[in-house]
Structure formats: structure tokens, C-alpha cells
Image (cartoon, rainbow, N blue to C red; front, top):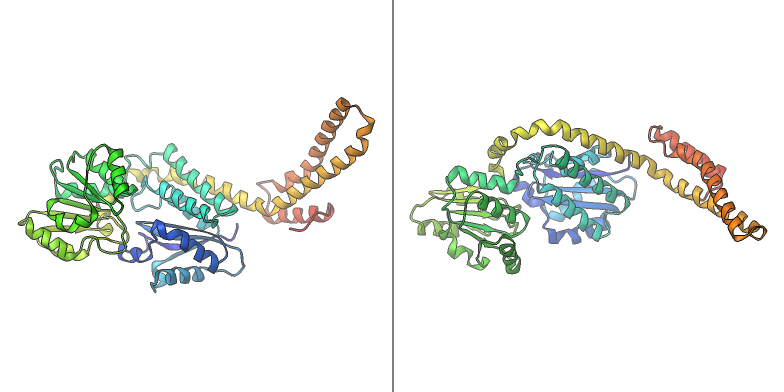
Length: 419
């Protein structure tokens, strides 16, 4: 197995107040990847969602370890967190973890439909920045294929439960029915859009959308075919208008502060109000929940709703695990062949060069038609001859060490170039 590291934190290892300190906004990722590449040369990718921040590294130098990766993350985020909040994986276990993440197996909401898109976006950014190259490209493409197979071949994603879905379910527990509730969704990204769609599916017709970028918010309303626009700067003065405020923005500061929420509550004259903060970092001051008749829920509060909604999906985990194991074996096999691919390429190149040289010596002895027949015959014979040693190098059942030894013997025997 290649030298692949995975380190980070997730809902399994830390509460939201820790995860938000390590989160990367999408606009941060290019600069962060460049810094990571400069600090630890090699291949790298960063996945950062509401429930996880994870680094995937294939260092080009020997001796790189998980402690160096954790130190980089701490320094980058200015957060001196203890090791207990981090996981660290290496080799095949790191690869398997990414496959489980992309398949929704490792999600807080098992089978979270959004995770495949989030992994893909992280991969595309790493590719665009030149941080993910041959090995991580193969790894992430394997992970995305695994996620798609789990989605199509199992019922793990049945019901399309996601964090945004659970947020709406939580609102239903406090306000039932939701039909006549005035609702504000802050954030027009993927999570915000899914939240609005889930609200609409529950019969909510009064949905207002706000976002930092006005055009993105208006584009979302255009795609949905419903919803009202509210400029973000007017948020505080209009909070009192809404029964439910769901924030999915991920801004670096509070969008809803304690004083603003208190003023809104006073203007509502004791009417119940709910804030659901599904942003990481959080965008609603947690003290809002101490106000009379005001509920304030964040990612840590979603677990009870999640347990109820995903119980039936757990029966699908063995089928998902079988797909993951199959894709992991294929990736491991590819990794085992990787060190010998230069030998295969050099052997093919040398055989073609010798064949072309010898054919050119004989070209004048044949007509054009005859030479074409000779050329095809010689090419067929050469392919069959070099196919014998190549079959040993590509044997997926062979011991990796013996394959490497065979490659080295061939290199010496045929006087091939070095690596």
C-alpha cells in the first residue's frame, strides 16, 4: 500500500464547537492547499463539511507522520486542540475511511445524500490547484464510484435523509403542522437549497431566503419557482417576522447575535420562535436558547432526530460494506501494480524500438502490401513474447514483494532505464 495519510476530526470525535474551529470555507481551500503543499510536499486534498474536516496526504518525502499533519492543521486554524479530538489513519485504513465517507456510511446521518457532492467538490478543487495528482486522483475517483454504487445498489440512501432534512424534522417536532409558519432560510448554498425544498415538501409556503451574495439567492429562488428575497443586512431588524429561522451559511461570525434575538423575541410578545443552526462554524449565538419562548438548536441537537430517521438504513450497511471492500481491493491491487508500471512501459517501448529498427532494415525487400503483412506479423510475435513477463507483473494474485523482484530482474535482464 502506498504512503497515504488521513487525519482530521468529525462528528464521531468532537462536538460542533470544536469542529467549527477547524472548518474551511470553500473559498479558503485553494490557499490552504498551496500552504499544505509548501509545508508537506506531495499530493493533498482537504474535505471540510458541517460534520468533518479531513486531510488526505500522499507525501513525496519519507518520514512524514500524522503529528506533522495535525500540527499544520492546528497552526493553520490557530487552534491548539489536544490529540483526543483527532483521528489518524494510514495506508489501507485511510483509503477505506474515504470510501466510507463518500458512501455515506461514516456520516452523522447514515446515507446522507449530500456527502457525495461534497467529496466531489473537494476533489475538484484539489485537482484544479494541482494538489491531487496520479494517486489521489485515482483514490478520489474510486471513492466517488463507490459512493455511486452504494447509492444505486443498496437502499442506504432511501428517503434522502440529510442534515437539512433533519433540521426540518426538528422544526416539525416544535411546530406542528408547519403549513402556516413563517420561515426564513439564511444561506443559498447546497444545504440551504435542500432545506428550502424540504420545507416546501412539508407544506410550508411562506419561505423567505437570505444570503450574503444577492444574485446567488435570487438564482435559487428562480430555480425553485417560489420564495421571497430578503437582503442579509436587514436580518436583525426583521427577525421578529419569522417563526422558524434556519441558518446554513457558515459565515465567520454570528449572523444572529443574542441582542438581536432578544429584541426580536420582545417584539413577538411571547410567541414561540425556533432557530436551527446547521452552519459550521455556527452562525447563531448559543445564548439565544436561554431567551424565554425561544428554542435554539445546533448540530449537537440533531442526534435524537437522526437516530429515529436512519434506524432502517442500518440493515443496508452489510451490503454497503461489501461494495466498499470490493472497491478497496481493486484500489489496493492498482497500488501494488504502480511500482512496476515504469518497467512495463520501458519494456514495451524497448520492444517497439527494436521491432521498428529491424523492420526498417528489411523494408526494401518487400512491396508495400507485403511489408504491411510482415509488420503486422512481427508486431503480433513481439506482443506475445513480452506478454509473458508482463503477465507476471500484472498478476493481481501474486505477492507484491515477488512482483517487485520480478520487475527488478526484468530491468536488469533487458537493460532497461532506471526509474
